[in-house]
Amino acid sequence: MIRLTEVYKEYPNGTKALNGLDMEIKDGEFVFMVGPSGSGKSTVIKLLTGEVSATGGRVVVNGFNLNNIAEWQIPHLRRTLGVIFQDFRLIDKKSVYDNMVFAMRVVGASQREIKKRIPYVLRLVGLEGKSSRLPDELSGGEQQRVAIARALVNNPDTIIADEPTGNLDPKKSLEIMTLLKRINELGTTVLVVTHERDLVNRFDERVVMLEKGRVISDGVGKYGAKKSNE
Image (cartoon, rainbow, N blue to C red):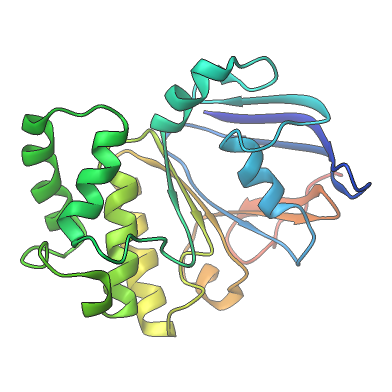
């Protein structure tokens, strides 16, 4: 579960990114987080991954209270999260398989776990038969599937996808979002941060809209259709 309660974030340069934000995501939910540039979306992601700390309020992620989390606990927190980036962030000189091996070794997985888990995840994302390819031998959509596979390979509780379709054409974008929905149906909580209104409206899912560091709408259906009382 993710819970942000009356969260404020002010950066050292004086930028007030979050202004009393309240949001809760239950285990197993699929949620879109949307909003204009500067609304606080990126700051929320940085808070959830422990990259930055809140100025005020309470942040709880998968059982970890990030207000008083110890340094040694942060790697344990991050093992419960799989993060997918717009620019893929694959290691260019490593094959698809070795990109995933790297992600598993970082968390101390055994060779037996690696050999069992990677083929399963590659099948799940539709990349069986491409484990030996280098990233630049793949299409943009395939590279994003590798990024999704890498995020999934350690079996996280939650996937956070930051503009996962920003570099893809509409057809590939729909394919990637459909894949994320399938992963959610297998039991993984999924939070997708995006600005693509048309894509969001293809799915009948919960949409949380931010503006000026606060939640201004939260509901199922069209992009920000159901207004909150704030």
